[in-house]
Length: 150
Ligand code: DQA
Image 1 (spheres, rainbow, N blue to C red):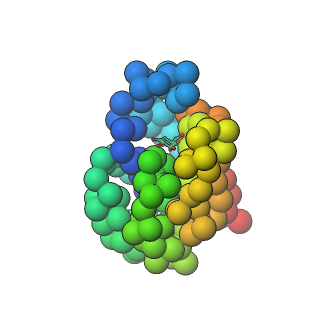
Image 2 (image 1 turned 90 degrees about the vertical axis):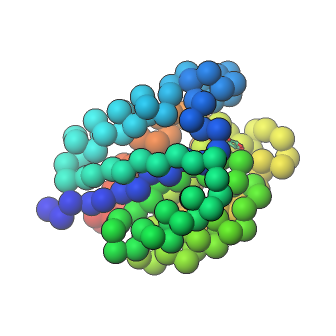
């Protein structure tokens, strides 16, 4: 079986998970989510994950743009840039044929302020998972691997 390489990107303020508004985002940290995802990847077999977090839109855009030829898929929580960044949305669309992406949100953004209802990144993604806190990343990983392996 071919080894799948998956890029896991997290946007602004997600480094604060665990202490950041836990009633909305849960108590898991980015490190514990990464640990759970690695355990899930090991169970799935032949899946390698690479994790990055940045508060800078340009870092996220560059990682996405550089993903072609290196990664088979992307799992992304663009955080607040979901609702504001046309550049990030364009980046996801630019690589979508070669490196399909799944968008994840810890919270159900549709149940929150109206400004969070729109995603500029989701149209370029194969799907979106939200509202399941840290477990959403596991759901995204399983869905992406299923999509890639058919
Ligand atoms: C978030 C939802 C966004 O609206 C917010 O700005 C975040 C986190 C989520 O995972 O629920 O930072 O992407």
